[in-house]
Image: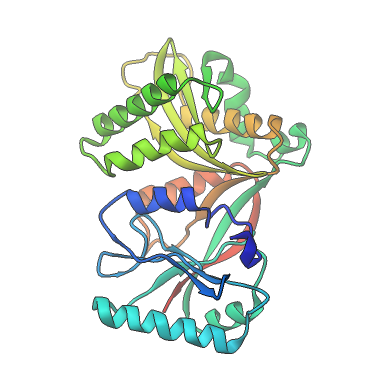
Length: 305
């Protein structure tokens, strides 16, 4: 990837392997070479009768900046059209990322195509912790001040033993199945999550109340960049408290503090959706939750080719 002129957490081989393992798909990702020089990184798979990743749009293709020109872009698009024809699909869904170095020829082409504007929320961890806290919404600050002391926070990272990592990932999986009452992604994807922790590309955060796990948050880490990846809250009806339990709020805040303390410069909260006609109440509710953290708002786009 770096030989192409990029250094992207969204195109890292290990992370792509996870996303392609979550559910059934036909992986057609490839690197195209000119002699021994990589010129194109194309992460694609066939899922749900379109070119799409199992759990999200395909990451945008990367063209080597030394070779980037309209002719090369045209050749790539012709190749994608051939894939569509061969696989019997009509749509290619892909997403750009605001932190990627821009490739103007690709951006100009994509901006002429059908696209959907969305917001990407990325927290600047280079700011002083006090300022990050003051940028939180008023209600979130109150929740943290009043209730943070009642919870216990645990971190599972590369420093832990393989046995401990595997045990906690499998408990996370079991809790997920218990909560959703079904297996929403493959067993392999959970195993890869554990492997990513061992390789310093993932971290699992756990929140407990009275020694019982009430919330999980799995995060990705790549160089100085970090992001929330998979989250689960357990039912709270067994607890009787004189305060409102909001474990996701507390766990996210403690995770942000951990990332800052460990010298990460950004924490990606993810996409923020507003269109009530396209997104579920759950997705819209999560978007409102993310807004409470006062992060920078980047323009982002999903493209349909």
